Image (cartoon, rainbow, N blue to C red):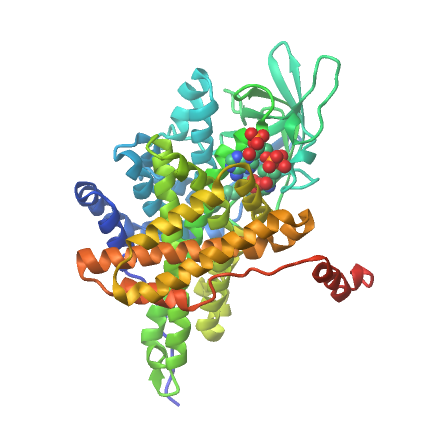
Length: 567
Ligand code: MFK
């Protein structure tokens, strides 16, 4: 029998091969900006499959290690990380992966440029995007709420392009009582003659080798009283080490053994009198921290689509080399159908995420209208929760599309699934964010902005080949509006039970409007009809997932679960 070898998939330049990214940027950016940044994207598209990919692979193989004591019994609390993780830090700084967004050389478009690079970088980076996300969020937080000293010191380090100067930041929110319900935070901030000192335990801290962190704590008043609930939380800035390199009264207790993100150190730690500074005055800590976690949620979404694109690129390449049943996989109708579905889902998510990045850029450069600000507040949780879930689904299909080898660790394919799985957990789970969507609608004009924006986009579409789809999206939008009016008259349990389906409907319908608008633009300006095919395919699927969980329905749920009695 002749020897048989399976051919591994190969990747080409991740920018030049990504026709969607290229045509999207060309269409959306002013011509002079596109021409100026494209050479950098081309160069970077090559790096992410060469030296950066090697750094990522090496970092993944070398897990962080906690050295709690030195040989003489002294407590050291040192986290040893891979040299490649350090290299990724230097590369990120030099490539401007955070700084581009703050240099603002391209005004509000700077964020599009920066996030295009992050999208290319993420799947090769061993999730170095995590410290970048928190650092970017911390930079924005300081820009908005920080004092002059923080701006001159921490902000300058966070946005530095100089590897010896650049800092990363942690975002320490999660405590044992919960990462979702921050109102149960127990860390206390006490004021002494030198300033604030923090006492408490942080249960999940990511990228714990960072130079600084933003965290939440409760202020102790002069009588030693402490305000409960989330209103009583204040925001604090701290540096992990002093000028001698000693930890700032922090005990690192444990490193987490996780399903994925293995190169990333995630620690449990105690704050035992950690010196820190209040950011933006007392209280309203959650609200201030939201400036940071809104940025990290956008990073989460860009990482989701970066991972989808990488998986699909690998699967498509493999389909051109792998034979089965006398054909290449690329010629098998069911395989084509499967990959097409993934590609359409990915393209929808791509448009949603980059649209949000565009809105973020406008908000930061003060060119966003009120409607766009309300829209951004609503779309951040919608986009984060939707793209994370689709990222997992697509990664799972990609693993399967490789058959048995997709399950083999050394192919690198299982990593796609592990790295996707975290995206629906950190930075707010799907259910927590679904409830946040309801809050974003209730507290400002989120739904009004949403509906106006979808309608406005649909009005632009006049190509008669797309009109049937426009009508379908209009109907789905009316369904959403009617449903939301009904939902406010129902009880809280009703609203909570339907929240996930509602958020998914918001995502699907919004994406439909973006795809149709893009299809119209590409047909008109570039005689490119492919986006119309994608938009039509998107609109063929269910756009809404609205159902009525009235009291009977919810009681039936409990009957199905047997009231949790047998568990
Ligand atoms: C690679 C990608 C990224 C990698 C980074 C990962 C590393 C980090 C890992 C983690 O940190 S995981 C921790 C994950 N935990 C969360 O993300 C928290 C999830 N929970 C929520 O988001 C809850 O919705 C929340 C804790 C915010 C609810 O708390 P509350 O106190 O009940 O909030 P409430 O009353 O809704 O909001 C308090 C204030 O904040 C309000 O302002 P006002 O008082 O003026 O009305 C809100 O409007 C405001 N706010 C809340 N969420 C906001 C927001 N403002 C803007 N945007 C938001 N998203």
